[in-house]
Image (tube, rainbow, N blue to C red; front, side):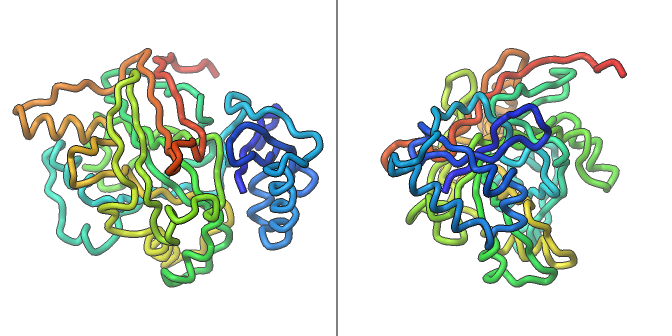
Length: 331
């Protein structure tokens, strides 16, 4: 099944089902008003949702309509939890080099993870709003899983059974604010504004053989101003898979239904596949030329993040955002 959240003027939007080809959709509010409600009651509502999805894909659904990603909020416009990991340790090693920090060897054995802000998840076409270009705005193309309830202390293999959906994330970072925050020893906050989500979240079965229950084996396509930044393979060089990350997150707490867990910026050791963020590009330029050549994002820059299936069809729809410089809002 493929899900989206239609902007109906409310904070949480209205749940809709989307066809496999992303061309048509149908309301599902009579089954579950929102995606969060569907996740809360997954076992009860999934059969009815699947039956309606099957009818939509067979062209037999009444009241279907043309699907428009521009009318969508994030699949979970406000999530109970957004947790981001750095499963591609190669990426973390490069980024830490960029700010002159050594990477502890333990990062290869123990997942790095932080809890981000989830009170406002950006829609796929929402702008990247920054107050200063000097903050070093960067995109980070990631794959995230969405869970139902995961019990405390859940081991990796059972934890993987709680993955209900997958989607794309642009985990926006303000790179020049990160060092000052991390040196305090209390983690990210101002350097991690709201993240953007793909318009569609999909059940694992929609991914076919590309999803092996632990990793998604497809490239993530990333563009800045129409120029291809990279297409790193998501299933390659992922040190910690999703069940392992979920088990780590649930070690001391239960994870509530609707938890979003990101795998971190997709990154490959094979540099010919390109990158999924500008910080990595700049670090590689520094290693090659002694200094970075590529700038961080500027006002007016456009980014695109997408994943295609083996036949070249978009799976989640695209994240397409424009950078905007904004002034503080008046109270």
